[in-house]
Length: 469
Image (cartoon, rainbow, N blue to C red; front, side, top):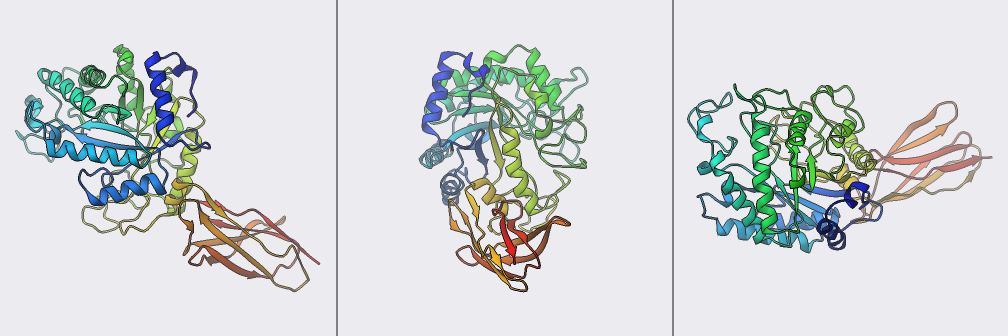
């Protein structure tokens, strides 16, 4: 991990933490930005399937970090009474992640009923029942000290095993804090969140002084109404509250949102004044120029859903994943990018359900998407053949597709391209790799030409030049 000038001026204890972190988690030498994954299946306490997924994240996908929610409502269902079964399972899952070579970020979320501000229960979002508790209502001000105690309990219990604790998830959206504004306070959620930061930071630093405190975790867009606040405005409120000494890193979720004409990672969102995608992440970096940034959720859907409003092809997802990590690496402040998630989810179990989430590296069926290999890295596609052929003679092209973590990759459709000065690169054929990743294809060059094979979005072979005599 490359250290920015801003990191060097932090307190000595934080520098020591960075050194420990570098020594204990997997950091590939070619990676500027740490690769993380966040998937509910991987961090399902006590789940056998979760242990299998954790092994995949660490051993095959070679992630450096795993991010996971610990729901306050589940951990402390009654005031001062912690669910030992739930927290023991969380503890075991943390140990599993560490055994797989990954550092852990814990994100607290979901206000329990006993800590919820019931003054808002009679004015819920549309579609919710009046007078009923939901975990998105804000924490009561007289329960903020309980939130501090909860954070302290977690940090003390998991001391030395959790790299960082993140204060809430997407607090600028109504599913996590509602309402975002009130008749008397146009920045209600941001102001309440600042009080949460004060409590959370005090708790974490009391329980485990070596752990990092991460705040923000903002969603990529907001309309500055009762349902959402723009990430720029939310960050500015935190900035002006003078609480920067209370946290070590700022986090954001720079998803591209619907409506943009070009959704590539390097592009800004449709409305840069109210949204922050990866393409205009500098907007937030400038708010906290002396803080490391953790991008703790990111991804692209490969099937349309209502939450995001657009989708990309499998090849685009794989390509955008590679480009996103490369683009993030341009900014010394950005230390981490966490992909969400390992496997697609659908409430009906049916692919294409518009209420599902299709950001996964695997389909609902479990089959790997091309993006799985982009995340894993170490992909190689070879191409060989004769360098000289006679006129009207055929040329046998052959090669192999491999991935460092799994070996030969079979059953993948490769595109064979030919280059001529008059036409540029054009597709001339497709070929499917065999069980161990090998492929063969016969072509008939009509003149001296260049060839290459491509697995769209993931990897391409070197150019093979042929002279026709």
